[in-house]
Amino acid sequence: MIIGKVIGTVVTTISHPHFKNRRLLAVQPLALPGQPDDGDFIALDNTQAGIGDTVLVNREGNGARQALGIPDGCVISVIVGIVDSTTLP
Image (cartoon, rainbow, N blue to C red; front, top):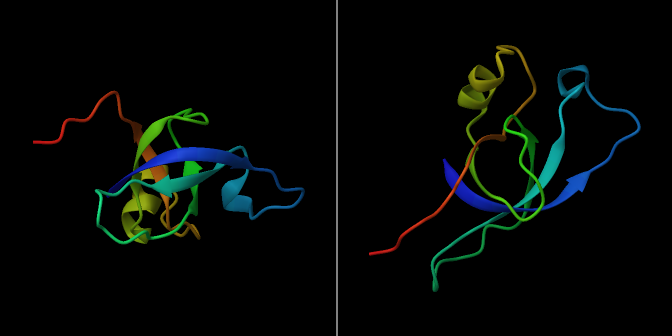
């Protein structure tokens, strides 16, 4: 699981059947100062997140497929929650 910020949407004219009726969002991982940047990635939205939202993303294939209820799906990343606030010690 990682925390990231939704930075955009992905629009496709043709997509895999497992992606039908699901939104694809571009996510930028959030890191503490001094931590390496992992780079942006695409995740399926399971929460109705929008651009600018801070989200919790499952980036492990089996867990992502279980969250979506498609055990044989070709999914690696899925947004499973919208973060209201964070606090650093």
